[in-house]
Length: 67
Image (tube, rainbow, N blue to C red; front, side):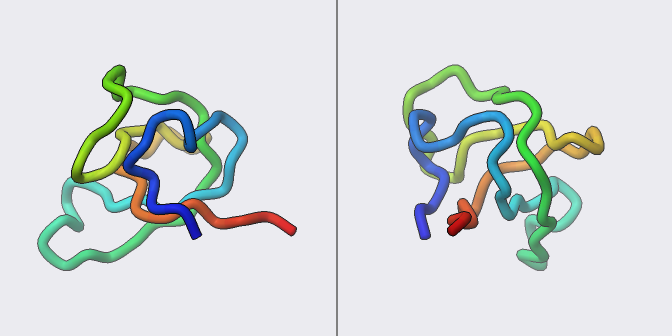
């Protein structure tokens, strides 16, 4: 699995696990489909910030590889 810290690895339509702002202390992951990339930098040490299809915003922790 890729870790989602490099912007080039994250694309709209991908299935990912993100950590929401409210879950940063607990590390609870939320699964969803990427709608928009919100981080403009090519790399972010805590993960690329994205908006999911359902409107939730968080940083990508894992890219779920689709077979």
